[in-house]
Structure formats: structure tokens, C-alpha cells
Image 1: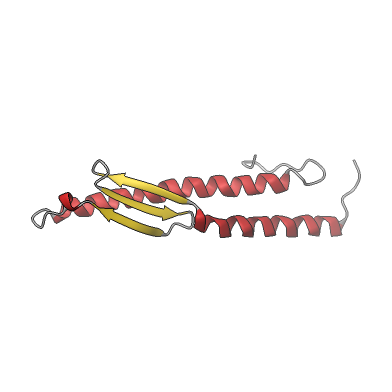
Image 2: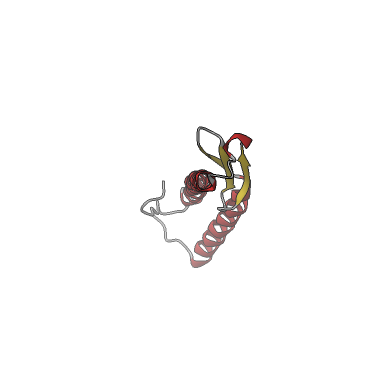
Length: 113
């Protein structure tokens, strides 16, 4: 196996950084939905962990039981954020794997496919 030149290592590192940057920017387009109360409350989050939308069915709005509505909102948002985190992690792992598979010397990083 030949030696990897320093300039080649720098090029590969720059390519890796660019692909990670692109993957991070694409996370804004990743969407995940969480639901609670049998779908009466739903939340949508993106891969950057931003809540984009909350929908509440009118039937769960009870002025005498605001705590139930609050609990449903929290549950739906947490579920959406959890799903969005899983999708974001998968996207970042995929980006890392595609770059690392092209590195010379069969370089492996634990936890990255």
C-alpha cells in the first residue's frame, strides 16, 4: 500500500468537511411527525430539531382541562423531535460513510458504516 501524501489527506479532509456541511444543510428538509391522543395533536419537526407545525383537533380543547392539552402537545412535540433526531443521525452517518469509503488506506472509523 502506498503512502498517502499530505496534500491528498488535506483534500480528503476538505471533501469530508464539505459533505458534512451539505448533509447538515439538508437536515432542514428532513421532516418527522409526532402524534398524541390518537392523532388529536400532531407536531412536525425538521432534522435541525426545529418544531415547524403543531395541529390541534378542536375536540381536545377543553377550557376546564388545559393540562390534558398541554400534556398532549408535549408528547407530540417530543415524539416528533425524537424521530427527527433519528432521521438526522441516519443522514449524517450516510454522508460520513460515502466520504470515508473513498479514503485511501481503507480507513475505518468506529460507529460509521
